Image (cartoon, rainbow, N blue to C red):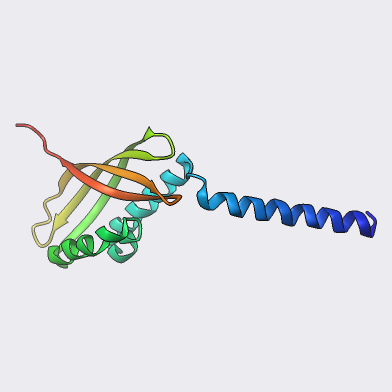
Length: 139
C-alpha cells in the first residue's frame, strides 16, 4: 500500500470511529447489553457488593436502595440468584427480568426464595433498573 492509500485508509477508520462513537451515545442499547447489565447487577447482589449494584439503578433510587440493604444488616446473605427470563416489553426502551433470589438470615440458615419481577428502562442510552416487585405466592 502506498503512502497516499495508507493515509486515506487511516482517515476512513478515524471517520468510522467518530461516527460510531457519536451515534452510540444516542442509540438505544441492544438486548445483549440489557442482559449484560442484568447479569452484572445480580452478580454484585449475589456477592454483597451493594454499592456496585446501585450503579445499575436510576440516580434517584440509589441512596434508598443502599439504605434498605444497610438496614438488613450483616446477617443477611444472598446465596443464589437465578435469572429466569429477560424480555423486551418495548424494544430498546423497557424490559422485564424475572428472577428467583435465594437468601438466608444468619444464624437461622433457613433458605428463603423470592420471585422478583424487575423493570429495566433505557435511560440516556443505558439500561437501568427502575422497579423491583416481589411476587407473593398465594396460599
